[in-house]
Image (cartoon, rainbow, N blue to C red; front, side, top):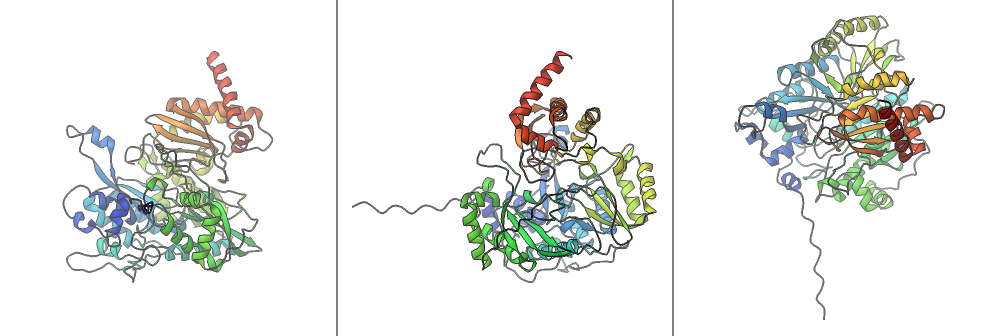
Length: 600
């Protein structure tokens, strides 16, 4: 008689899962290690800290420049602030800039998810930094980590447009609903260890500048020890959500784990098409990883947005892969289960069936750069911030110029998904004054930059990002400098196409659904991707691999020359590459490059 088969062994969980399990709702050893005098934290705390919005980093260049002891890490911290929908006041952005000078590396960075990053904070200043963020009526809780991160939404303040107002109000509700409930954030960062006194949780001192009409979400002290949505081990991996209008997909909704596409008629929101399973990150050493666009899941009325979002988060909590972080995102859960099985499980958790998606889909995209009427007699100005970095350099005093605009004009502030700023609530007379301030500090207005530069963006990459294998933020502006004369010569100066660059395949700048994606392969070399598009609803394809940085400009020039020669009327770059096919573009461009070399 044959023996009974042995039961299948449960998969071994990752070390990060172990850290979360033992952490007592993210507490772990953070409080103890915070005052131990060491420059950094232990492995467990490094992972838990992400849920509080901070990454421990090692500045590889600073380490290499140090005499002796080059193997000793140059530790500092990146801290990200949660800004749902990118909504800020002038006072809050001023305070963030000041914090960069007082505690960080003298800059701040606007992110591709409408939040703010500070770099170069040392461990001894972490608690003071968190408290300053809190006093500024914001929070770093869940800006990173295995939780719902900063939720995105179109930031344009079009008053009198009830659809936008309703969408932004729904985002605010969802951001509060999916926020972690753990008291650890308040115990570790906002409590005096000697007196036990806590900072004021909701509010803080009044801002010294007038605030905009739309109030940002205030962090609210949790009242429960347990996590009713996340449970004690939170999610298997990060989780990203965005809202989008069909006519304006400025948040790249299909690149998110969860997306809500507004369905509206005659100024009223009928509901939302729910899409799920998007994500850009790839691990180059793991063929099982891939970028993905979200899949259309179903339609819900406005009152069911919180319920369906919670159901999807709970399914990912229970069925996401906790044995392999490389395949732990929602896109892999859906890939493994299959879309229909995933939908059925979501309906089970939701408690009722999902209606089929409405035919509505994204069909427009606006980065909101330039001057626009708000609909209330005032204006907003979309100001391009190249790669999101707010900094002063010789001859380019951007940080000082923005400070002056904020202090003098007291506008509302919104961060866009393209790392730029909207100054809101402006008078018509402010137009000349803003141009005067910018020019007086060596800064171009949005109208004076090229379309090519306007639609480009890059991740931080070297020297601080631990995943980066190549440059990105520091070299993309120079690459754009090289390409601008080419674009002008070809007569393409007014063609809008996205150029996105990352220092590794993890894809923080969303390079896999744009017209031209440039992804770091190894130091000084990149993979080129073509055939996505501005609308963000199509993945691009690999065009050439291991391209040296110094060859990128001529490779892209060859592609643009092919586009100019053979495109159809009104055809975009991405649509042209998709129609002609990557191999067709490659063959044409290689022949052109060979001819160019022959005549060189």
